[in-house]
Each structure stands twice: as structure tokens, then as C-alpha cells.
Length: 178
Image 1: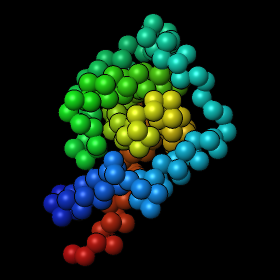
Image 2: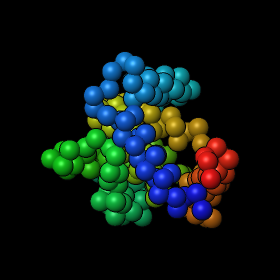
Image 3: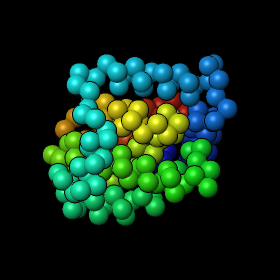
């Protein structure tokens, strides 16, 4: 299977590491991706309410489902993506920012809530915008707001996500040499 290919995993890891390199210049993909994502977020039809207000509500458990809060806590320690440029000393602050971002999302969109795999997207968003939580939240909300309603559905689990990954693997299988 393609997803089991060590060459594919190595290639994806190398490309991601290069893209997220802290030494990015204007010619580097990271800068272009960051600029593109910020444009996407700025163009979102309805900007999310103030991030600080959402964080404050989440801190007081206002509008935050207990099951979302529990799953976020479980997944925080599983959110480390080896290729993300988060030095070991900065990981506690990264996890705290990730917690705030995910909990704020759950307050903003309680009908969607939290689902596993959102932690990886949010973690990458924080790195792409150099840990500017407000910008990362805006990007996260813009991205998830454009996904079909069943993308992170609880039943069946991650239905849309699974369909997208299957399609991506199919396309990669057609593009990669045997």
C-alpha cells in the first residue's frame, strides 16, 4: 500500500520539514503558504469572533462540551509532529497555545466540536504563522469552515477525512513511480 511506503513517508517528511523550516525566505514555500493561508483567512465570509473572548469562554467551560475538552487533553501529547519546527524547550508553550486554540474552536462551533486529527492541523497552523495564536485560529477556522459538514463527523468516524485521504492516496499512487 502507498501509505505504508517508507519512501513516501520519508519524502513527505522531508518536503514538510523544508516547507516549515525557520530559515524561510520570501522564495521559500513556507512564506508563500503563509501568505496564501492568510489571504484565505482574510477572505473568509465571516471572520470568527474575537479569539480572546472565545478563549475566555472556553476557560470558564462556557459552550465547551466535556467530551471535547477531555479528548483535547488526551490528544495534546499526541500532537507532536516530528517535522514541525518546535524546539523541545518551546513544546510546553506550543501545547498550551494548541489547547487554547482547539478549545476556542469548540466554543465557536459546538455543533462540530473537536475530533481527533484537528490537533495536527492546528499544530501545523501555529507553526506556519510562527505561533501567532490569533492568526492561527483565523486560519484554522477558515479552513475548517470550508470543509463539508461530515468531514470530521463522529458517525461514521472522520467520514470526510477518510474519503479525502483515500482520494489523495489514489492520486499519489498514480503519480509516484512503482
